[in-house]
Image (cartoon, rainbow, N blue to C red):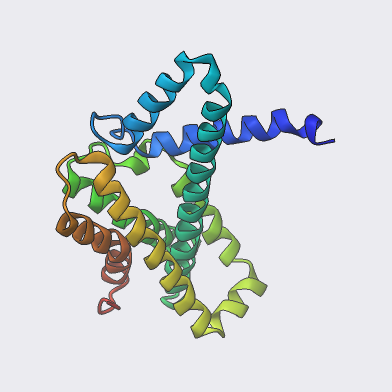
Length: 212
């Protein structure tokens, strides 16, 4: 019955929200989106007549947070695949491939947070992205999966493109979340750095000309 699974679903959304919030440790400054959401929900909660609206608004915000988190995890996994395959192409062992996969997955985000002055970078607040990248690298080293990926250059280009698109958008959103004086130029610049920074570090560590 739906009523039986509802508490578990609600708990999963709550855990996902906490994981997403820890990814944006500076997002609770004044005059930003998340503080406005909290204040709006607080005002609605003061009036009992607004309880249904409050529950609906909170559910919508949680759903969006979970959706963004899932997209970022997909981007981290896609970038980790490209990093691991670069390591395999360079005849690295599993440790070297994991280092490259982790670098391409979180390198752009670390560079982004340094530019924005968000210390320590979000990657060190929430290890879920690093764990996702490392697990992906281990999966890539499974012989059948590795052989399949080695023979599909288009698939590797697709993985790189997915990670690039997701992290570019994520980087632009991060600029608005942690900076009260963000403008379009800052958002675009930070978004590009987030998208291409990890791949740039990967190619430099692998001794290749930057793919970009």
